[in-house]
Picture 1: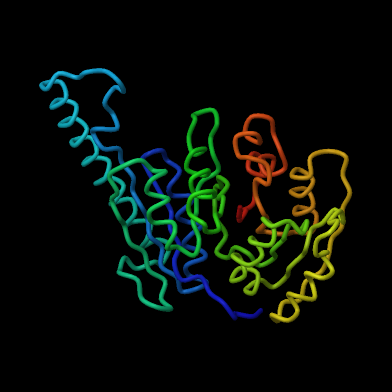
Picture 2: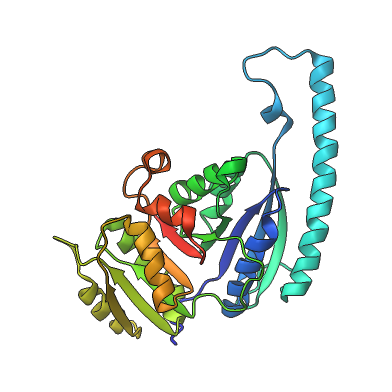
Length: 288
């Protein structure tokens, strides 16, 4: 295992939807391993965001909405803050300001839309952690999109789990097709790659006019990373096959370029990235 690069800061947005604990546990596992700071960002809508669009609202009604919103937000924030403090203690993360090389956590309250908060704070984070979207409840899709397309940072999708292992990324799989997105993923997720005990490059071998997986292995070797190539063929979704290959080799973290086609097209019509987002049972680092 080499440690040429490190994760120093991890950000995760939360709201009162019950998904924050699982994502925080994923982030904490990485924070402890790297001595990183976790910034938990509680997002709540402003009263203006709750006003009917294009409809004139009488002053007295506007005031009632603002007061009710503020009261509800205060209660939710108090509950989430207490939950954050208890979970931080349980996960071994002292609540403190960032300190170089020390695993810590902090809680920030943000008034505004979650997609705006992700764009604001995510650009200065080494990694953004988000939950797997819940399409049935229409939760998390816009947050994932904002994190991937608006932050310029790697995004770790955290699947729902009963328990989160103490270590994430002992065996890292890299989805490699020589694309620009895959190249960015390789570069941005290098701290996780260099810290792994095992690295496997997953490829279909179809990388015309691009760097091959074998060439990528040589590049990683220059960084002190020993990697092997796992070539697979498929007649179905490459995304689903990629997840199957991860299970077959025992990888506990997948790193891949995401949404070569547009987010909207894949969300509606399906695609390799969307297949991974919809079906992943291990954490996935996505980079556009």
